[in-house]
Amino acid sequence: MIRNRFFLISFIFLAVVMISCQQSERTYMIETNMGNIQVKLYEKTPLHKENFEKLVAAKMYENVLFHRIISGFMIQTGDPMTKPDSDSESLKNELNYTIPAEFVPEYFHKRGALAAARTNNPQKRSSPSQFYIVHGRKYDNDELNQLDIKFSESQRMAYKMIGGAPFLDQDYTVFGEVVKGLEVVDAIASVPTGAGNFPLKDVRILRIVKK
Image 1 (cartoon, one colour):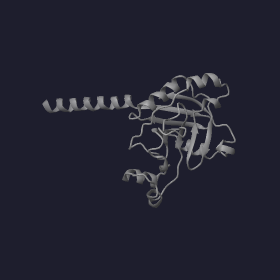
Image 2: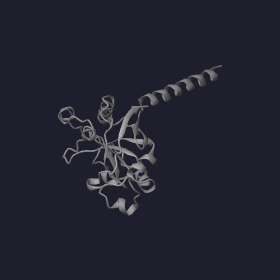
Image 3: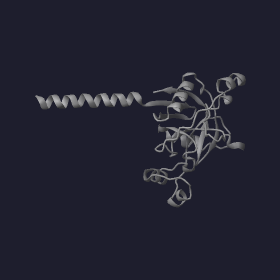
Image 4: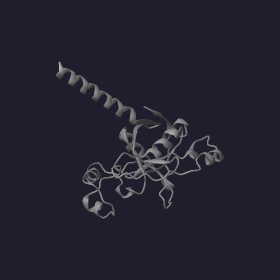
């Protein structure tokens, strides 16, 4: 009887832990005209997570373009000025802020990383709305050794096996990652581009929804 009660309590405890983990994990679906990309937001970058959630709730990302695409590097979006019905003066007022950098050692620019774009400012503060997803390429040990960055063994393995953009680590805030839809990232990264790495056909976010 005591043993059965112990197993029952253990089972309930594990169930509560699993439910708590599921509730704390913030997952969103980025629906584009080329397919869907599911991303998970990290808990240790709360300022970026909360800002992203705020803009999603305000439908700020609906109909924005992927305006900068570099195959083997990243796909960038989130500029509301690329929306067909954008109100420039209103947007300037709404997005007149930046977000403090949130560098977390275990969050790095592996393939599929979700990170905040920024201007060239000394505090490395992030853009209020623009973000990118790492497409990346694979790096070998010699290339990683040439970078003035201390990588953990797991990070080195990731950059060698799945690829990424290691030279951006601790320079831009990584606040999430793709959990489903990397093939869509590949497809977007393959779109032909022109001046300024601007795609020659429209690739748009239709909407972003919480999962």
